[in-house]
Image (cartoon, rainbow, N blue to C red; front, side, top):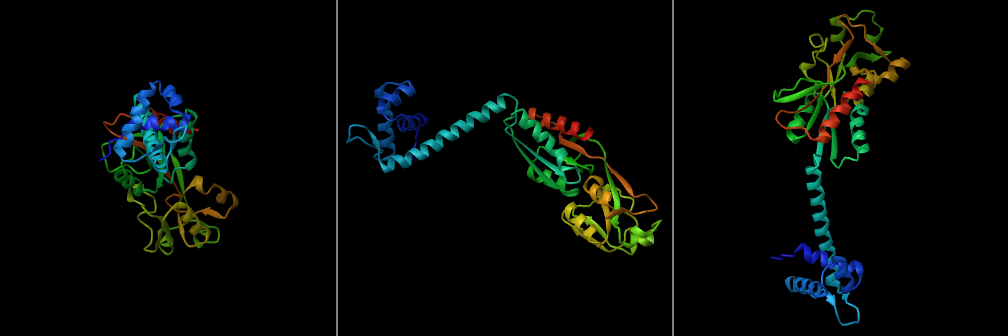
Length: 294
């Protein structure tokens, strides 16, 4: 098993960078003899002739060029490790993984990412979207640090911070039969297809939960759901922010549901109890709260 040291790797890299043993020794602040010793030991350990000493100036053999590549990879790993350690010492987390509900506008979730970039935070940020009950499932399975959800979590060992509420509207295409009824009754809803998103959950407590018919189409996300509504395939609840243009143009219309066609989502951002948030996590939460209040 090879036991190449960082000192040997640095010595080989210095020779390649500066061209001569004398200059390499000066760059490393070592004696010429120490550089020679390190290189000979490296050749002995690898069992390879890494340097061609037959000419006036020492040159790399093909084997030496290949070993140099790997030594530089080793030095890059050392640099990355030093960076990670410095990041942790300064209070920044090495990484921050966030799972958010697609009900929440992506622009609000990206605002904290922008804030971290402006601060030149060294934390690597990963943001992943899911929908409704699938948000907590992914949060738990991935070991993410933050969860932005409109559903109250099953896990009671989470600490939540309230965000500004979001409105959802019960809508259908302007030519859908439900959009033409002045006061929609339960029997009217039961005759048409309800469009839902994968992960829909009774905890949403939608006004239509007890009256929806048996005909349901479940889609992967709200973008697909909006397309289905625009195609006139059925009716459903949509976050107001995602259909503002269609409402303005009149292509989607609110259904005159007797029990109300507006529902308020109350999103929260959650982190695990007992896990003290680092600088990036705190900044992300603060920026998210500010974004949702504007």
